[in-house]
Image 1: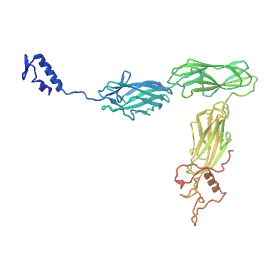
Image 2 (image 1 turned 180 degrees about the vertical axis):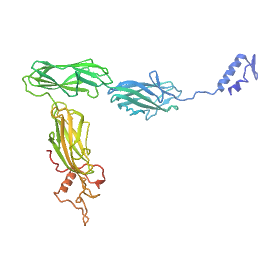
Image 3 (image 1 turned 90 degrees about the vertical axis):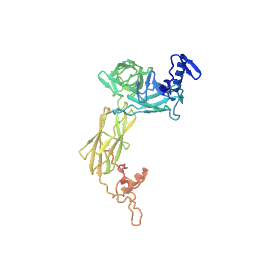
Image 4 (image 1 turned 135 degrees about the vertical axis):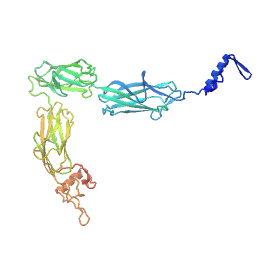
Length: 488
């Protein structure tokens, strides 16, 4: 169209006559340029345009932007520039200008690290043409690994109304390992320094190593602190050489103290670091001081309780009759009555059949936590008989108890058939003809007072369990026993 108009407006060599006006060649060219400009349609549209950048690096919608390394367990913060390159105001959603979330896994089934305290702050409702704002993103990785945070900026940008991109970071974490030469020092372990006399100075240099992916940092003011002390000591000193430790870095921790009085000594040493697993790594130094009472260095001592009574290594507990189809759970307390941390082996608990029946109907919890002195843990053993018959299983608990590193006891049970017809269950889940049949007068028969069935019903009612109909419809539930045999 412009060409069609400009063609007849071509300026002649001399002048151009329009009506009574005569234009020279120069003014003729000006007129042609003005007409063409007025008739040419504009190629730009009035609209906002959202752009995000990290410094000089643009982040397009759909991109994954790498933030580099961040420290696990430590807050990480980043700032991004949000610009409006359009010629109209950029307005953000008034309710949720930015949506933020944490990805749990990737397309290659890689599990991402979870974060805490995820916060995104934009701080403005809109941006004028050519203007910008700063958006901050903060989070705290909970462990080492890859972190992926997804952001979605919602605005009136017609091209990208939902401007979405991922922020990826690698969370690093240190891992402290303490060794005595070639021997690994476990958390809570006792190191025996041998005999000494009053006035002697005792201590132990140990090698520390960082086998993690992040820098291992010791507390600047108190890298080594003194914990619980048994016996008389003086002038305790602790020092770390080599901090901070880079990944695979080595260092030395030294300790020293003076024996102040007779009697065996136990000194708890605490290493204060940014190790997420053991930020306060504890071990004990034991000394046998001449002139004092003879005795071993501090050590854990495991005691097993069943129904609030202690059972000994090799004992057998009888949990009585259990109907096929029912599930019984026995809870055993594990107390540490020693004076050092009780830790468990691998495997922690093992179930071994003892020639009667099968151990397949028994199962035990795993994942027991370390037990400090004076505290306890709980072991749950479940019995779900699949067939009638006697059962005898040995439960073996492995720990660092020097007296009984493999504590073993037996559980005895009798799996019996259920005797009640369908739809006629008593409160403890066992079938029984006397548990609630209607007689000829329409009344419900009750078991005789003092009978076994009456004791069972009273036990269940006292526990606050309500009958909700035919309990035989339930696939799984627990029952309350009566008069279990004592441990023998």
